[in-house]
Length: 368
Image (tube, rainbow, N blue to C red; front, side):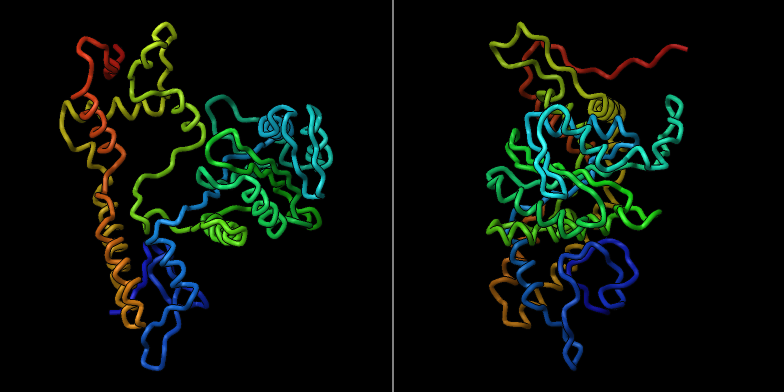
């Protein structure tokens, strides 16, 4: 049976055409000696050390993108906090003020992009117009020096987009985790018809690159797939995160002293999720378990690969690191679907709920 090193997911080939059946790499293929024994290089060993040591993970995500000039301007105004923050351009200029967003879109000549003149979709239909820009977020956990996040973001943008795709960026420090908003024009500057496409592999490579740039800044940073770290929960979209900030805990009332204010509304996404969970709790467990078997299958593959990694480390004399890998695997949390997690939190809250308070109840079906 061929040896596998900490991978999960499907793919057809590895580096340099080496065959493989997994795509979520924690450790890429090491070198094999004359006898076919796998040897891990210094980079792979360092990656393992960061992962089992729970080094903070970088975030690189695409948060959307404008499909017309007005949408791009609105986003630039928003990330520039309507003129209060400086927008750094690819030309090294720092523009600030209420007119900065309009100046940038005019300089990028977005009005010449053909896709911008396609008709808008009818209400309820998907917008199939090509994006004029990609909105990208580069983020680090709370406590990271913001100036180092910005420095790494500058290098990241320069290495990936300079002299090819116009871009602008701004640092945000109004939340615990410092992050940079990066807006990149989709159309190439010098090759008509060439566009910037962002795929899953692109994001994976960008995460690894940004983590390396943060390490160059002296900040501990890592980039590994969530399944390899034992994380099963998928991140929610930005819009949902913004709505969840106003949500206390699935319908709880505001803390004492704020009772005179109206309680925040729940997000429609979480409300729908909660209602489906409550129906499942009332009528049966089946809905809560949907998707769990696939998650368990992925976890089994990840576990097998981590154990193979530990054996490879032992053969190379890395006994201490192999022991840390074993401890890491043993500490992986149980696999839970979102519905199971919500149900568990709801049951816990039900045990501590104040008598007589009103709870969220599933909406009654509409009469026909």
